[in-house]
Length: 165
Length: 401
Image 1 (cartoon, rainbow over the protein chains, first blue to last red):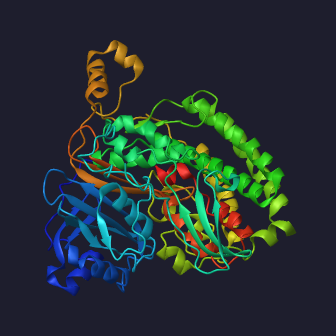
Image 2 (cartoon, rainbow over the protein chains, first blue to last red; image 1 turned 90 degrees about the vertical axis):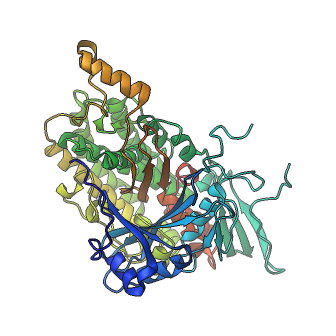
Image 3 (cartoon, each protein chain N blue to C red; image 1 turned 180 degrees about the vertical axis):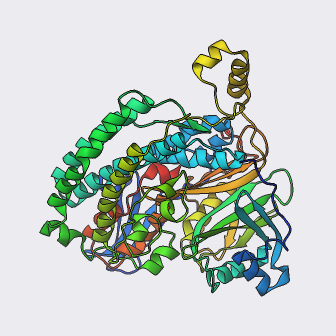
């Protein structure tokens, strides 16, 4: 099966439950969409993220009620540098959606979604530990993998694979 | 040198409570889990898991390797279900490449994954029972596990770090006598599960230690990101093998065990019934095993057969190029999730079009499941903490990565 080219036209993707729900809320909620390899990606603005998650969680016809994963990608040296990635799953409808938020390189921070899913706690701590992205409103934002006195954030692209010697 | 702060800090809330440190070296934490407990007499007031003792930076290492070199790293994440991790990784890369996998390879993957599930559940059952005080079950479980490890050794040459799946198919043809051996095992195994159940399911001591202990509601389990038997034990009916099938699971018939009670016993029942369902899937895979190639027809990705490499110029060139330069993967990103013995195992891979992955993230089922521990234990007895840790079936290698 050869790869189909990705669809980025929002008009063609309006029927996806997550896109429809966010467009119902407000037109500017979606910065861009991409449907590639059977997976839906929605870029939202940093300030809209928490509300978008809350809306998707309570969407009546297709509630994305389960947070699968939170992670981050470092696009150093381009700017915006960080891309925080959220994977949501709808348990009743077996549908997935990926939300993405771009963050600048200088003191990256974003609203925590722990008020919506308490399970985001560990995932956000991991992103903070390994990428240095701060989550505003997180109940216990401390390193989780690395020792407390570790310097730097190992999964950043400007951090050498062998570590600092 | 920065100031050395102890991690993490849990201050006693009231005068009558005390802080108890459990682990990281503790026999019932299944590895190097450290749990901080605030206790009031025998009652747990607060609980905080502390992880990271086994962090090896596998995600960072993956970024420096070719795509095919990451496969052996995935074994080492979860040493109880290496083939599940192999499968999840290769499925994600195949999705990035748009590769079609021949039926025989897909069925072999299903067969070996179900054996891995049995293997992992046997270790869980044995150690969980040992924690609670039932020693015999441990010996029985490891007897059957040994046979599964021998099957793995037969097919891949390794007992634990199998690395048997490759991007595009399997590493080798299954050897002569392999299917007979698996069939023999599938023949005896249901009786053995009866044996375990005879020892535990009706045992009054076992029931007292597990029934009504470490309860978690379905709402809490969903909010905390629990998956697998931890979630199904609370009555949420989801199994990715059935609901979002991969690797031709849609061609197999099996039931998804669900219990409503949400306690340690419910999670125990879910896993024990899964043992029976898994051996059923193994039998179906043996009966319907298709004939044909075990590797996809994609010479730029899949290594040629050894014989061809020695006789054909083309094959030798492809072999040389894949080994020295890797293969390029079209830019893009995928999130591939599969049902591991512990829940939703997910690989998020970002490709920038080169031969090395730009970012590999493993969504570990235990990492999220561990967050349910405070909800299960707070307000309950200290002795039940051990039962609760056992019932969520954690592997610290997978949590810390």
